[in-house]
Image (cartoon, rainbow, N blue to C red):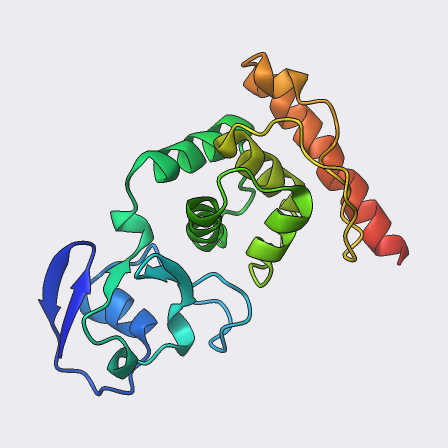
Length: 196
C-alpha cells in the first residue's frame, strides 16, 4: 500500500488493518509521533490527515487512501513555526512526551481558527492529555502563536485557571518572567484539581 507522508510517497507491505502509528514508528522510523494509550484517547499520537488532527493509533492505514499525512517531523509553514516558537518561548514542556501531539493539535486548531478564545482552545485541544498538567502554558502558547495575548475570561468545566492573566511578561520578550508566570498558573491549577 502506498502512503503519502510528509510530502513523500512511501510503499508499505504491512497488513491494511495496521494502525498508522506503527507504520510511522516501526516501518518508517518517524518516532516523533508517540504511543500513549492505543485507543485514541490521549492525543500523544496525533498527526494531520489532510490538515485535520487525527489519532494515528486508532487509524488503520486502509482508511487513508490518497490522503496527505503530516507528522511532527514534516510540520512546516507559518502557523507551525509560530506555534513551535511560542512553545519554546514559554517553555511549555515538562517531561515532553505528549508535546508532539499537543503541537499537532494546536496547529490544526489555528489553521481553522486564527484567533481562538480560551473556550475554543479548550475545545480544540480536548483529548490531548498532559500528565504534567501544563495546560495553562499550552493555552498561553496558542494565544501567543495566534497573536491573541489578551486571552478570554470564559471558564471551563475542568477547573483550569483562565488565561486572562497579564501577558506583559510574554509581550516584553522576557522568557524567564513568562516561565515563572506560566509555572504559577500550572501550580494553581494542580492545587485546585487536588481539592476537587
